[in-house]
Length: 359
Image 1 (cartoon, rainbow, N blue to C red):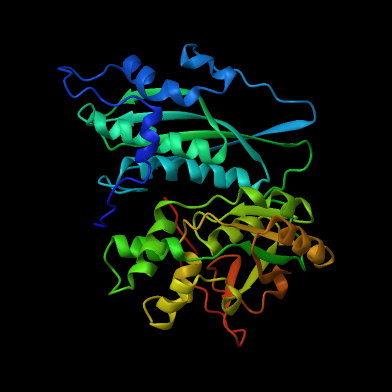
Image 2: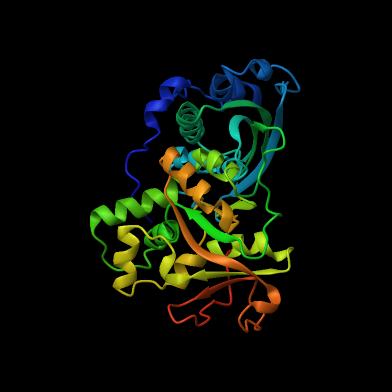
């Protein structure tokens, strides 16, 4: 497995108590809450210091509450030997990415942990430290949750809350024929990082290796995209299952087909080098998932406004395709999905699997 070295979240452990190495007995549920999780609730009055059975959230006038939930299971979403601080950060960041895709600002989150009884306390300390580090970075606080013991794998669930001006949320549904497709950032880095963890790729320059691993372990939720979406987006989604899969979610219920031009998909320099070296295909990168970028649709008349908003926000966005009525889908009849990948000649190169599915 990858050598993650020192847990980058270690400095945040100063915000939570360290495990007592001399303790004869493992901490009980409420001692764990007091030691590791209560400090994470400081700064959010409605959390009641995690001393109540419920939390209290006040929604300011003119605002709406946005709620999202994501789960991570050891052996499915992360490797059991991954540094706990990295696991915590990725769990929180994936939820923040969902808020970003709606244009919401982070407010608070609840956490459910199902942990083996034999899990070392050092793991819990590292996990809490990772949450503390990302709370400080993204301006969010723990408001409550639950903890249970399990004989199965580590299972972690976060429900994140965000605020948005009432009536301004950009949903998955709303795209129209002729809309342009945009995406933030770069695509495919995380799937290449995962391949490096699994040691499925050959020798890679060390700088490229570290960049790709960081993109896999520490995704960057695009929380600055809200003003860009509000400038003219008709629909949006975060890219978690894969660019084609998540774009497909946008158009599936609209009777449309999305056509993505492979050559326009934004790639990082390390990804371009691996693509040029035939270590991957553009289809691999478009379907790999875990990019946690935001894909969104924009009517042509709003293109200039969206580009101006992105420039003001200092956010890189790339136009990668367009939406067409299903009947004008260019002969796409093999049933592989409503988001299509075409090469420079307009030929369909869509893979059978558009992205990750649990079932």
